[in-house]
Image (tube, rainbow, N blue to C red; front, side, top):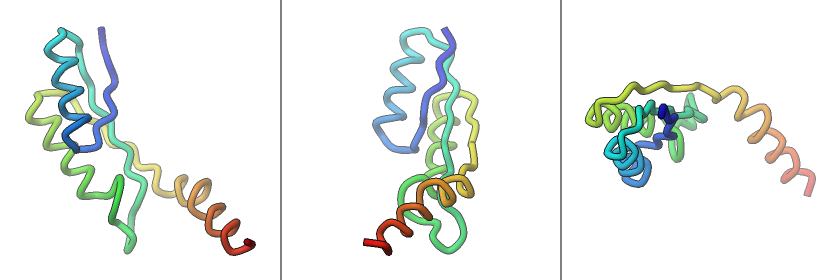
Length: 87
């Protein structure tokens, strides 16, 4: 069975992908990039994407990165900031 595994680059998602491989699944890794520019830190940053890429390479699986930074700003960050500013 082909499985799309969300890879953060951390231990939990890497171990989960390895366990799926051990069970005989065809695993493909996917990572969402949510931050960019000056605020490129914290969860889902470029460094996290690189960690996930290295983890996928060590596991021998394909890895895809989906850049949702513009959408994340538009639909999550900006509404949150506006709501917070309005009390």
